[in-house]
Length: 389
Image (cartoon, rainbow, N blue to C red; front, side, top):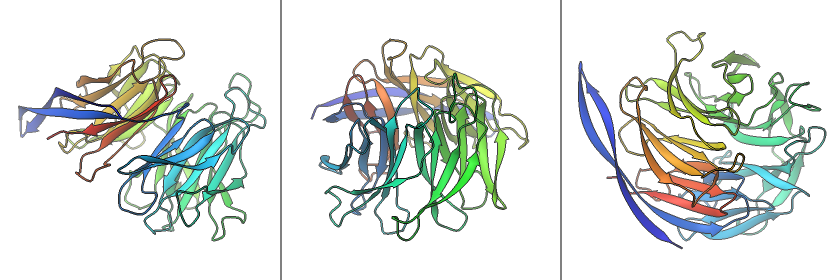
């Protein structure tokens, strides 16, 4: 494993009454290469073995594996689930035993919209380092992203989103079927499915949020038709359009003044990362506050967290440089005012890591989130350890 260290300063503007007081926050980190991988389609950071530490889970090309914190020993829990590649993973403790449940998507085929795609729930053995038992669930074509989300009854549902609608040609035709799956007591039995949406035509990513006062989580979906918010109310999923720009990636956070924001990559595999602020009216579209970067090469991943420990959030943007070809990279953006219109950029990585997916979570229990990135072209899995003081 290779370790290297960096220190950079990011200047944040903090507001006190009517005046602005500048405060310097230093973002410091070390890098640790964990493994050489094949593609690294999807990451999750959850506690697999119940020791109270978050482990790294990875959906690689033909294997599903987890890396045990803190040794990062690799345990392969599934192989060759489908003829084609795996594409996504969802992990969360849904039964309260302190250990995460895992679902994965596969049979990935970017252009096929008739039958390819797959969903498997992985039933764990007594020793979670061994192979898990795959249980096949019904699927829509072009399975692409999934999340476990909390429901109104206190349980959890597996939300699964295809890339495109069934039979689409040139993203025209039927809308994609975003569905939730409820696990029965015996996961081998039929899972109850519910339709969330069927009118979007291309959607690369989505994200669970909780923007209201109930414990139930909602979904924000990045799509060709813009960013949409879906909230389960009185037995139905209610849709609300937030933006009209074709977006491929979506995450949310809080600005220094407390205002909620969203960050996108536009369009899918796009060039532009933009910030949108929550409007005063719940029915209004979200205004664009800033463009973080408009020359991304194949933008593919976002993470939002308080990496600096200042009580508000910063944004990590990653791009692959695969199509179109270019130099990949990861950059961290910190707001320098309460309005979210000005952001400071820090370069975290360049050609050494071509991002396929990024996740953030505290891996060492010090209260500061780390950044974990998986890469397709450069074939590496890396932790950026947060050493901010």
